[in-house]
Image 1 (cartoon, one colour):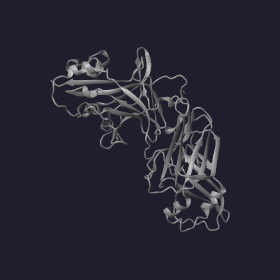
Image 2: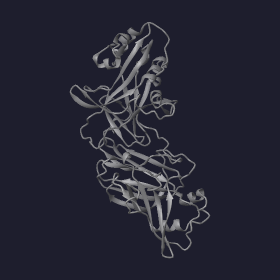
Image 3: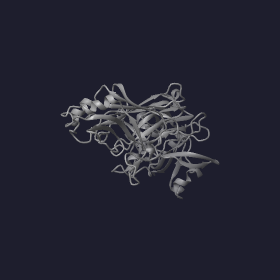
Image 4: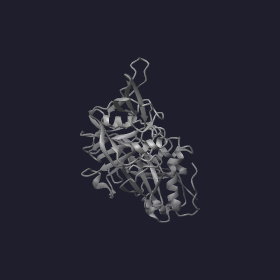
Amino acid sequence: MRLKMPVYAAFLFTAFALFLGCSKSSPFGADLLNDQIADYAYTDTFTLRCTMLREDSVVSSDRSSTASFFLCGQLNDPLFGKSQSEIYSQLQFSFPNPDFDNAVLDSVVLYLRYNANGFYGDSTQPMSLRVFRTTDTLQWDRNYYTNSTLGYANEIGSKLDFMPRPRTAYSQFDTSATASKAAYIGIPLSQDFGNELLTVDSVRMTEDSLFWHQLRGIRIAAESNSTPGAMMAFDLNNESFSFVRLYFSKDTVRYGYDYYFRGANKFTHFSHDYTGAMVEDALGKEADEYLFLQGMTGVQVKVEIPYIDQLKDIVVNKAELELTAASVPGDDPLLSPANQLIFTELRGDTNYVISTDVLYSLGSTLTGGFTQFGGFPQTQMDNGQSVQRYRLTLSQRLQAMIDESAGDIKQKTIYLNVYPQGTSPMRAVLYGPKNSSFPAKLTLKYTRLQ
């Protein structure tokens, strides 16, 4: 990893003593030193100031039809309150100008393909799905955000109190042994909606933009009366198992015509109600005992390292933020800790970008993964106790803080987020920097410039 080198000077040790308390080569840090303790110094005594903040919205539109899944559900979290996700989408006809002359509607059904890997919560409890027509037109050429909504009115279908089975595969239309199978759900839609589709003007069925103006869009929302509820995940871009199918008859012959989600604009909307939840009192305040993180653009942690600019004339060899998953009374064991955390940096006043250390791990094609960065939970033994621990690399960003901050607290700040912010339903509760057993801390291995 290439790190920027500071200007040579000669008072590093004094700065360490004054601002960090001590600099040490301890057994705790020996695993980082690779048997070269004489060549490096090590410390983990930095002051950290951590504040929980609401995240800003991010783009959730899938105009390119590349998203793996869309979240739809309700979580009733004892620590984070009520979170909901709903889907807004257009539909794309399977081929233009179908022959609906003299057709008689039999039924219309919405099919949704589950993505089991995106589920979070308890899928063994009943859920309900409701489908609505939007009163606003979902624009095919516009990016929508996680806080975007559209007006909606008439309910056109529902599936109430069903048990999600995201890992149980069924054949959809063919009962033969070789039939394609997948986990999916079918939602019957209203006859009025089906008849409207059947009578769309033939001109509108030759041009997708004209059809989208007529349809406007649909909204898919979920409800749960259980604790913790569930956030379901649907693969809308799967043309084999996610679509609206219009069943109709002509001269006693039954036909089917499909409207796909793939090829149409669609987005998710997230809402969070923290009223009465543990996280409510923590928002906007400096945290000592616990840190709260939540996906679906919920909660992030601002981490300030206020005295880092007092370090001079060092090269950062390895810097990591060490965080331990917390055990909190009343938490639900089904809501497992987030499986990936990242750092973001604030550019300007409102633009958050992935940190340089994360980008280094991902590589130029953004496909390199997080192995070099870390940020995923690992089981470790600490003082005879098994814990889930995250280690997040901060080497490049910390070097920049040391070299360039010049006393500006904004330049000594990094943000901690659940990844990916716009699609992960997971959350994490971590011990804060003043926890007596497993405090959050920044560990640094460095070289002095002589």
